[in-house]
Length: 104
Image 1 (cartoon, helix red, strand yellow):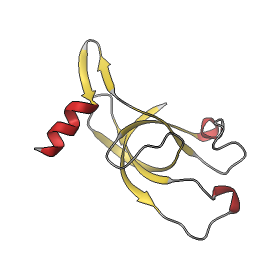
Image 2 (image 1 turned 90 degrees about the vertical axis):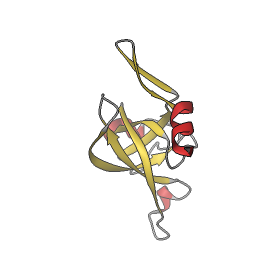
Image 3 (image 1 turned 180 degrees about the vertical axis):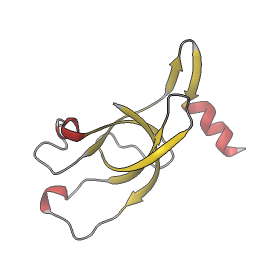
């Protein structure tokens, strides 16, 4: 699994039938320090996440092992929205605190 932040959406009105009904997001990679890392991925959403949220996502064959993506040509899937993230006792991210900071 990887950590990223949803920074945008992808809309495609003409696509293969097996992708119909999937919400697609642009996800920016985040490093273990909580800071932006290089790279983006387009990921299908399986949990009802939204722009601005920090999420867990998987790529490659793992992305096709959910009930939402089974037998679909998907290379990245959002599998969870992160509420809090700690490393060695240090809090790297907390969803509530980040929302308050964004409002200020």
